[in-house]
Amino acid sequence: MKRINQLIKLAKDLTGYDLDFNFGEDTHIDHDDGIIYINCNDNVNMVFNHIINSHKRYEFLDYEPIIMVVLHEIGHYMIFDDLTHADFEEYALINLGLELICEENNKHKLTTEELNRPYFDTTIEWNATEWALDYIKEHKEELKDWRIKNV
Image 1 (cartoon, one colour):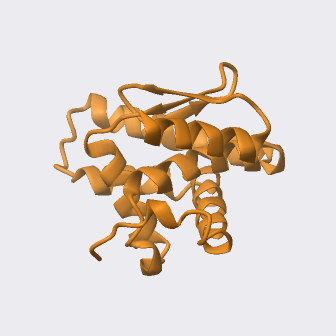
Image 2 (cartoon, rainbow, N blue to C red; image 1 turned 135 degrees about the vertical axis):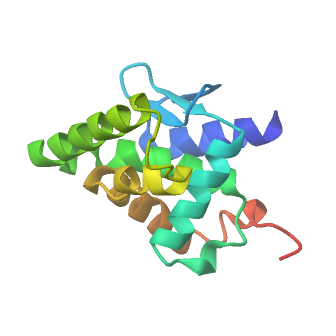
Image 3 (tube, rainbow, N blue to C red; image 1 turned 90 degrees about the horizontal axis):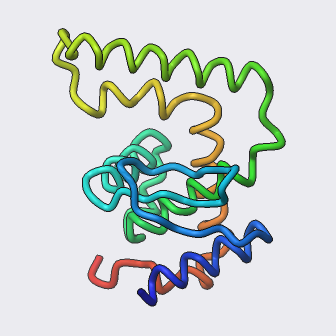
């Protein structure tokens, strides 16, 4: 519970709002309700691996995946006002395409990573990740407790 409270405090300090955390089927931020939903199963590790590999930022491999994922979600909040109508259209089209592929039972037998790559490469997802990585880079001392000790 202590770690969750640290995440809640970090989210509040960064955004100025009382964001809360909840556990859900997927990982996302609900702007209207002020809740960051976290799926602590494979979703966190999948998101973390994509962040590291697609952005080629291997210097962050020694951070706990949960802090990277939470900062990515806070990044959505922080970049929201900078997004354009085109960014939201791109995001919606990619999500629609992924839904159609999943509805067809993935006839091409794509891996989860291959299915999710277009989603993570949208401007909205990419910029949220870049915000998170920049934050970690600029606040290493503040986030030292989130580093994996034996790496």
